[in-house]
Amino acid sequence: MRRFLSPYRVLFAMPRAKRFIATTYVARLGMAMFGVAIVVMIASRRDSYATAGLVSLVGLGSMAVGGPVLARFVDRHGQRRIALPAGLFAIACLLALAAETYLGAPTWALLLTNTGQAFAPAVGTLVRSRWAHVLEGDSARLHIANSFEQVSEESNFVLGPALGAGLATWVFPEAGLLVATVLFAAGFVGLMAHTESEPPVHLTDDVSRGSAFRVPGIVQLGITMILTGAVFGSGDVVILAYADEQGARAWGGFLIGLFAAGSLIGGLLYGLVDPGERAANRVLWFTGSMFAGFAPLLVVPNLWVLGINGFVAGLAVAPTLITAMVLCQRLVPAAQLNEGMTIVVTGLLIGVGLGSAIGGRWVESYGAHAAFIVPVAAAGIAVVVALLGRAWLMRAEERALTAPAARAEVPS
Image 1 (cartoon, one colour):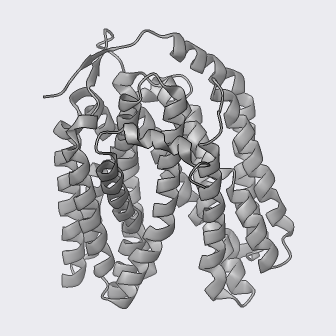
Image 2: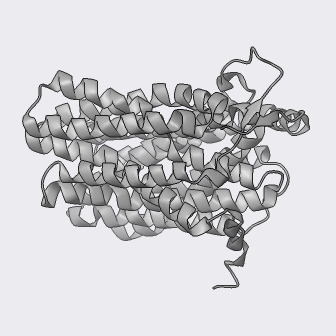
């Protein structure tokens, strides 16, 4: 096994690698706990999932709107100058939300406070931009680092929601959010203190450059991530409902875990494979593989088959996300790297929210088994988008790889 995983030794190219990996993992674990912890906290105190869902939705929407804007400022002024004060403000808002919930503040106050998530930096984006800086020019080693980061995030989103919900349920309602905020704060401050890996600010002669949304191919990648997120969000809801429908509600979390385990292993294995020079073509391959893995859910006969099918389907998920992130790093100029990656990650978050809502509505209207059409349809549309945009993405990648590099200025 040690020999098999030896390519991952590239991770030690990062200065103080063990500390870097540990702090970034803790920060993202905290972020992964936020959503569920907030929902369970407010639902427990207010006895209203509608209110809890509304507050959570406002937080997600604020993050979706504010994330790319914050990332643009990070690109122009550096991580510590922008992300550090913004992150501290977001932490203060999360702590205030817990206090307001405990004290019985009105719903409008909770909604207003949770808009502070607009200032929460996307840790995954900050981390990947640091790997791109440390491993600059070495696409093979960067592929391995990106694969590791995706596997790390997958494990966060398996452990985080369960930990957040468990603390809020078994300790006291605010416990999940408080622990999540402490973990995020500790890891985030640790990341900001890792000055050796902070990327320089890249200057460009095009002083009038606009948003990274205008970079060829980025909108298509964002749409692909929305659809991939919809596969996640709807899949989780439908699987839980299907297990409940089969009289095995307790097995719902285990079944979702099998999907996640498949994705973890798929990402780990993908990191060991030489992906070749071009990433644009692989978007079609992996969205196609994802659709092929999820399509049999339409005729799944029982929980056992669902579990096996889920594990196999999950194998293509992490490679899809890794490929999208690698391609984003190639398409977006260094001067807009954080903004570009944040757009892609935000698309994934939006897709999860939309998928959960649509999946839940379909379950209520047509039953759990019929609702498997939602993740399958999302995966199918992702294939269509990849097919129609394949030539466009390949041309955009070719232009990006031959573009002149920007000048770098190390932030003080």
